[in-house]
Length: 421
Length: 109
Image (tube, rainbow over all chains, first blue to last red; front, side):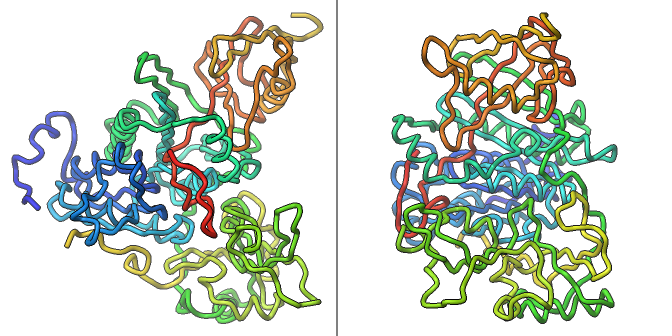
């Protein structure tokens, strides 16, 4: 890696960048496909101090035409073909910040919990899953962060930018979900994929990804240097890169938006119970803090409700399935192993029945209490919302939980280092 | 405007077609989209929605979005205005690992 010196950012300085601020910023990029890579490349070159890249997908040969970070054959043994890891290791040497940090996780973004957002300035969405985009939108708002969302198809692209909330009435500040309130009806990537295949769509080209990547990266820089931004409005920008036809739209809030419209300002109480301890241990420690029997809130908006058992969604099957995961994981492919899913049918348990819950208390099923925090979706550093017995607010209201706790851990528990070896 | 309704033109997201509709100012974005799904244009549906596809409504005169629960009156729509249907676009296009599991490979960008 080349060492930065006084001359490194001379041109960017003239363009209004303040490298000292950019060098100390952190950007979280969810999705390391064509768009995520192009955005990450631009941010690496622009001097962002820390990049966190998250993706669970793997490279395939056909990705090469729009993947600036596709590992060369001689790099594949060292970097692997998991997108997040390979992209992180390829781009780390290109980072121009004086002490660059590159982290990656070959996981679903939801698996990382709140820790992924800690210390972040801007959240960039480059994913295709609508449930992941809803999650990112909600988490960005909850943590008071700028959210930058991009999508493209053929020669068309759209950038949507939601600046970090800066006071004002948060209920009237639009979020991504104001426009897309129903992500459940179209959660099935498989159906989307079948339709796309059936239609013969080949939707992705590098040139669109590169243009959109540049727009996303600059939107992230504007989140870091707010003074460069003209106004605070949430906007979307569409462009056809062949006809140059473009449109900018001012976004507005929806009065019944199901998304998070608050910023959590409560300093969390640090817990000693870890993500690997049991739910019962977690409940007992939180109950001690609250002085009464605790109820854990599993936010409905981010699809964190616990799905313990539910019927396979294949209508011809309907077998009861053991899920033991947050709802989002089940919704990715809600089928039993016999129907192509990942969740095994419940075997020979005559008493088994559908069990899902948005709250957990010491009165919950013994097997739930015996599960680890990780199993029910609590990663290290995750914020856990809880209420005592006497709390009057309900978990489904669009308000912060009465008390917030944080599981112990560090970023190293969530991410691997992307430093090239 | 007749009987409190207003004439609005909807621009198709992919073609140059317009659909002219008489709408109540109290019609919401969601209701308008539902009506457009049901509307016929020369025997064909004006708008189809595959699983996974979503549309947004844009008020052309003000360049502002019309959200699902916003009424056309709240959005400032007036008779003669054009509303563009904007198809949602997605970030990356995965190879399938994010969507399916159990060894099912579903689609490729």
